[in-house]
Amino acid sequence: MTSRRNFFKKSIAAAGTLSLAPLAAKAMAEDIADALHSLNLLSPTLASTDEDLWARMAQAYTVSPNILNLNNGGVSPQPKVVQDAVDRYYHYSNEAPSYYMWQILDKGREAVRRKLADLGGVSPDTIAINRNTTEALATVTGGLTLAKGDEIIMTKQDYPNMIQTWKQKEMRDGIKITWLTIALPTEDGESIVKAYINATTPKTKIWHITHMINWTGQIMPVKRLCEEARKRNIISIVDGAHTFAHMDFKISDFNPDYYGTSLHKWLCAPFGTGMLYVKKENVAGLWPLFPNDKPQMDDIRKFETLGTRSFAPEQAIGQAVDFHNAIGSKRKEERLQYLKNYWCEKVKQHPRIQLNISLKPEWSCALGSFSMEGIEPDVVSSKLMSGYQIHTTSVKWENISGVRITPHVYTTTKDLDRLVEAVLTLAKS
Image: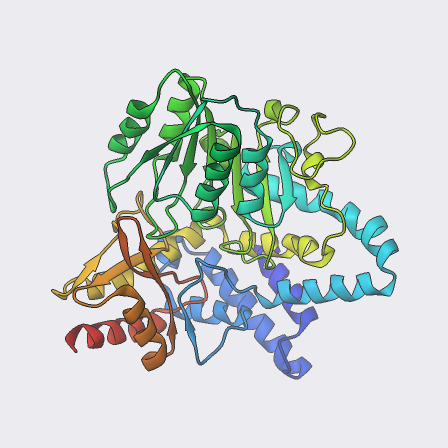
């Protein structure tokens, strides 16, 4: 707890806070550090409801006081310490780019790799740093050697970029995609597992599994799916874009063959940062998207041959991990779960409003979705923005129709009261 407190004192005080005078910046840093210290004295459950402490913690962010951002599921803002780290590394690079970037900062990737591996509960030699989930999983899709007629199972509720990547491979290489449709929301994980099993044939080589459906926040039974895939010698590929640093788990808990995530979502790392996990025994056999001179070596770093990249955001991932750890994974999950349930409970009683997500913790966390009878989702989302300055996102995809709401740790219940009032007002109109 002392180390977490000192992290905030040192990093925020050193960075300053926007244009505040140094004394005011130091006072704010002290207040955030004290709030964090107090949070760490509480259990995750008790801490989740302490509005005063979370409101003080929110000062670590620089979010707009005018627009209520409830689309953190798309991309999350970075705390000030992360923003300042990006600036610092960027200016440092510009002093002598080819020297500082390639001979100094490039070596700093190893420390970041270790931090991410520790957070994921896996070995550093299984973690590659890249730009987002799409790049991570496209590396897997493109790098696997499949034969014509081999089959992959995925759902129509998976993320579009993943769907399009597999469709291209189907067109190019003659593999076959078997499509599942998941009825959402659901609290029946076994029915999902059975759907994958029943669709499996002797030609099935891969199960593509989305940990959390981005459209609604539905948590999938990923551990069970990975277990069943292993029993059948089927490759498991997990899309973890919306769960890493959102929920309290380790990648090793469900032991997939491959896992990809975006760090600019729930970890609040710099924009355009992501991570690929490859089980150690799979590294050598996976062809890299951008090859080096030894594309079949068993070194995870072969997946980082991107050429010239922006080193500043990549290096600042370390500050984002420190910030996340200072709060604590379980404490963060409990708070996000509480915020989702807070607004859902207040709107669900209205006869025109339907929730598109379970409120049980095993089936959802921060992401939630609702539909309003008689009004299209894009209209609701537009009215929330134009009339109340609340930024959300509308969803119309396959069997899903609704407005997605995604708060983050800087969101307060007072913010969500504003959302609830707006939604109920629109429902009455």
